[in-house]
Length: 99
Image (cartoon, rainbow, N blue to C red; front, side, top):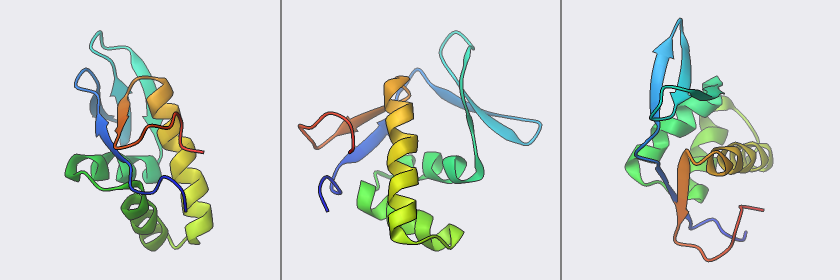
């Protein structure tokens, strides 16, 4: 599958905050950019260790009992949203977007 060796890093200006059991991504002005689901929270945590897209998809599929196809589609959509909001940076690829 195409593009599975790309990696992501969190934007330095974005922080995750737990508020009443939910994780919110905030920009450097304290504005909320995104509210994370359980899967989003899991993926956000995986970005710290430099996992490739392929590794993230496999871990999401295993942890949440999803097929790799469903995990792939959901993970790419989530990371595309974060990239569009400037919350993550894609590297090790020359392509734009993840699709």
